[in-house]
Image 1 (spheres, rainbow, N blue to C red):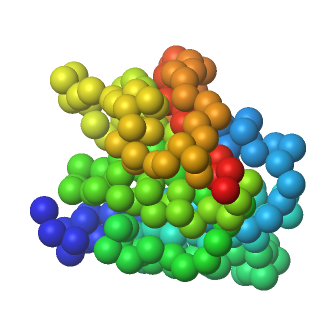
Image 2 (image 1 turned 135 degrees about the horizontal axis):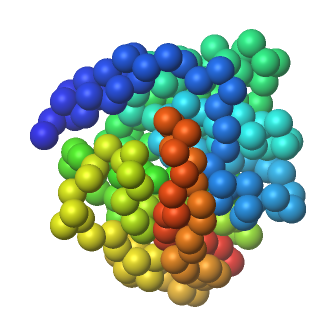
Image 3 (image 1 turned 180 degrees about the vertical axis):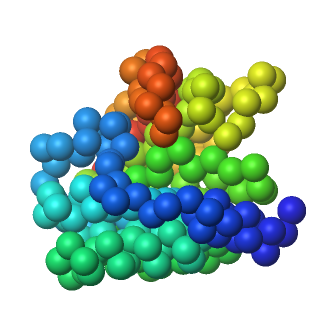
Length: 208
């Protein structure tokens, strides 16, 4: 499917649902990032903006990107309304066709899944190269299908964190895998239902 199809689809997803009034961060972001010294962060696939807003409120300067211009505009408006526009830059990018510029202490990619063609390995490799020495890349993927997931394909297979790391194919002299695990938790869906889900967590640090 074409880039135009993907943009149209994701713009439609955000345009047809009300803007979140209080976007919340992803669970694993708060778990991993709490305690890290604040710096510059890149949020890949920012969606409703919960991660970017949480980071900004905790002292980070954030570049937040999404393929959907609707999502990006909503986040920019929310940041202005809450006095965070000096800490959040929201940009529309069709990864990996265009990639944001800059160097970062943190790059996070939460649930960067799509029904459209996406060369994730290229995107995540670019993300690792965008890290400053000492910076970390946090990749959190689905490891199970939640009851409220848009993809209910029973045959879907979720790559393990080790498989994702192998696909990125980073030089171990420059990047070190610090965490690669499947972690269960109880999650709450958009309709209020709860269920146990599994997150695949990959944390890579640039050491040189």
